[in-house]
Each structure stands twice: as structure tokens, then as C-alpha cells.
Image (tube, rainbow, N blue to C red; front, top):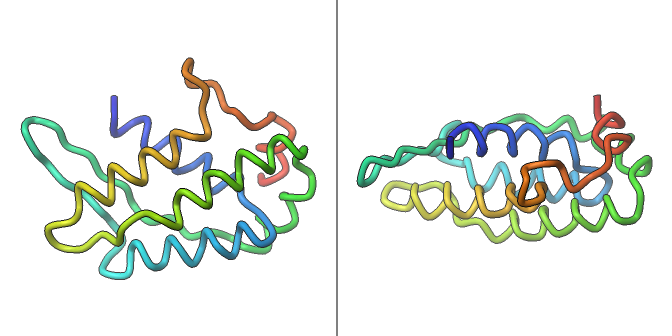
Length: 125
């Protein structure tokens, strides 16, 4: 369940970025995954992984202005959080994956519906 949520949130995050937040997200993503394309851990019967996805900055920047001010605030909060995620390095995988999951979770309400509007999500397709 946790891996599925992280994967869904990753896709949504990449679909919901733009302008300055797009560039910042790409920089954070490159920093977090500087040592490889996957960050994973297994501990106490729990396994989780996040795979680096390439952000299409142009698509992202073109879509971002189509989002409402409320959508843009959610996106900004997620990007700001993601910038604070520790890099995925040997021995630090769990901290990195858990921090990414926390940030990505900011895109969803408690019932797992997106916090950003459908119009905003569609702007990045």
C-alpha cells in the first residue's frame, strides 16, 4: 500500500509543477537522486522505493499558470518540502524515501483525493 501511494504521489507531483517551482523541483530531484535512479529500503518487514522521474520543465512551466492560486499554493508547499529532502545515499535511504513520501503526501487529502483541481492536473498532460 505504501509503495503504491508513493508511486501515485510521484506521478502526481511530476504532473503538478511549474515555472520557478518546476526548475526547483528538477534541481531537488537531481540532488536527491545524484547517486542513482532508485532510492529504496527494507526494514522490519516494510519495503519502500521511489524511482527518479524526469521532469519535463517546458511542459511543467506551460501548465503551471493554468492552475488556480489555491493549486499553486499546494504545489509550492510540496516543492518547498521536497527541497529539504535528504539525498538518497548509502545508509540514508529510509530517511530520504520517508521524507519524499511525506512531501508527496501533501498533494492529497486524507481520503487520497488530490488537493489540486482536475483542471490543474489536466494542464500538465
